[in-house]
Length: 136
Image (tube, rainbow, N blue to C red):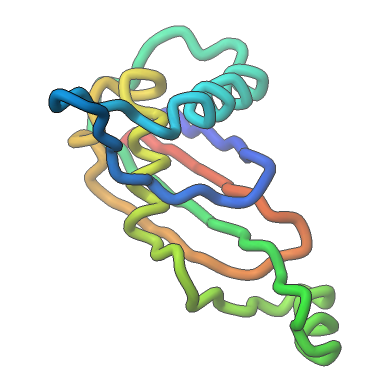
């Protein structure tokens, strides 16, 4: 059973809706960001050769940036390692959709293989997205 773990630095991203040009043409406004994500994954997993073909368990932690107006007592709690839940937008469903979209046909064949998902969205000192993928 294979386990893959990697971290994407920077503020977690939410999946955006497709945009439309004239005459019904559509485009993905996040194509460049998707390429950056895939590049960072390749840097952390240089030996990844084959796509995962079986069922997958996915654990994702979205570490959100701390707002500038956060009280000092809350900052102290975060610095001490206490979890402070992020309850504002973007929502976890859209951020999970972004992760699945970026890793589709890159780590696994299709995102329908994801059978079990655990995700959380918290404030942290260093914004990032932590991903753990397990074959089940």
